Image (cartoon, rainbow, N blue to C red; front, side, top):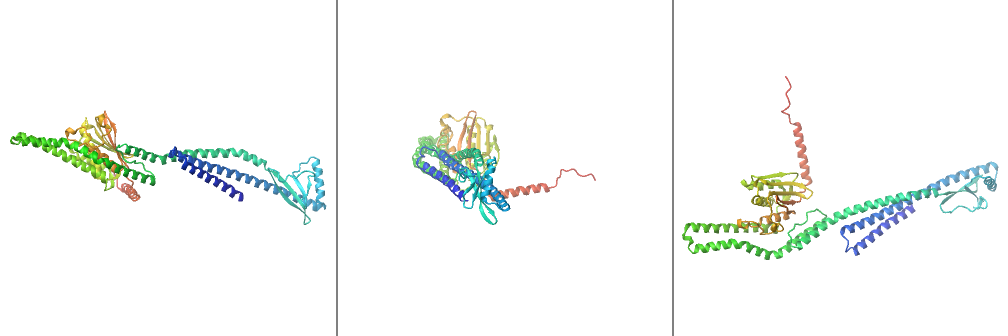
Length: 495
């Protein structure tokens, strides 16, 4: 037991020492190492040390078992020899020295005797003149007392070699080594997978921060991670909002003055013409008043969209509840009225998310309006919803193409290809802001031709356990009702 405790303590110490070395190495030499490599090195070394320590303990236990078996065999054999000699001395009234002489005679005749005979003082009587094998490497020895007439006359010593067991250990050691290597390889593969899982959200955050520093519109990563990474994610996203707010005022003022320039100029020109006398001519006055009203409506639409965009960007989605995105899409389609006749809706799987239904309907409506305006084929608009590994995905596809000069900045404010037709260039900006406010993202996945595809991706809603139990109970109740319901289509029995 003491040996086992010592070996176990040595193995544990080896593992702890490997962990300490890894910790110091990662703390001082990891500027050029990625998180994946750090985790890989740490786990591989620690598990490798564990496998090595386990192998040492297994070999030590086998060796200890081999020594115990050899000791037991030597004890049994020496006890038998001592009993035989004691009985013979009692029958023949012999002394132990006479027994030693007889044994010498037998040995000279060629008998193989693998034991030693000692007198009561411990002097070796047989084999005469030969050194004792006790204490030789690779052997164990046991002395059993020879009792004659109630007195200890000497001892029989049996020396057993442990060479066979050691050879067994030598044969078994490569197997243990192979097992340790296999465990080390499996540990390395597991370390690589774990390192990848740990590093992926950090790499996504790094990419996200780089895009923010470059001024690109981007949503925070959707990938679920641990509590610490989630907290870092929120902190970086909050920092992004604050950083974007600093240059926002200057850029917003410049963009707004640019967008208001045309309608204000139209109103001013129309007012000057009316002031100069066109008001006295009914048809001319009506035409310029119509132009003023159209410009005013355009300004109202622009300000309304700007107010909506500012509200969703500043406050986010406030009233979060479980919303079926498919239902929100149907509401948006119904709101289009006659323009929705050529829109096909395809929904697959569970499309529920956590969000504000009003804003979600607004985002889907903007995408559908954009599709109906730019589609070359009004009957080719397709709205699909599905749930995959990325989350809940909504796609709006239509025939057509997006001009190359606006593809990279399509979701920015005031970017439009139909400013002459009253477009404010804020519809897709609102779509992006709504997606980001719900922890999702908006992207153009196909610019055409022949098809233009816009995609919204949202994290799926996590149902509570109580909701899952209620749903399961409802399904079970419906199944029982269907079974107990009488079948009206069964043929009646003949009377």
